[in-house]
Image 1: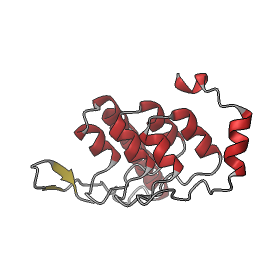
Image 2: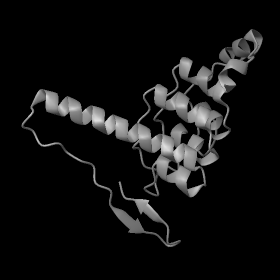
Image 3: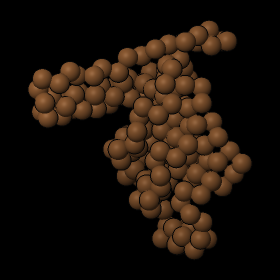
Length: 159
């Protein structure tokens, strides 16, 4: 696995910390945090370091995308796994109404899309089970997908 081959030098980490920049501070006009850039580059090792230093996993850039969206767009299963293991919100939609799962499908990364689908189903089942434990007579709420057509003819989830 990629994480096992990480060789960040202690001096490199020290110099990054000494710069004084916040781990969640957007460094560019696109409002992408270092976690966005790491996930978008498929750099699981750097993303792990960002997560360990307190990066906001659900921070959205100007497109409304989180690091999870960025990892899905480049097909980085390593980054997706790290983010999901860190309890990222997988149902967040970007400004076009797309989740990371939607982007993985549309960018041609079916393995990543299936992974996110499986995680979403597991989270839904877990939350449904918790709801039933609280009140077994309470109806189980199911998230319905509503679709709308966009100019390109691609179907997207409406959030």
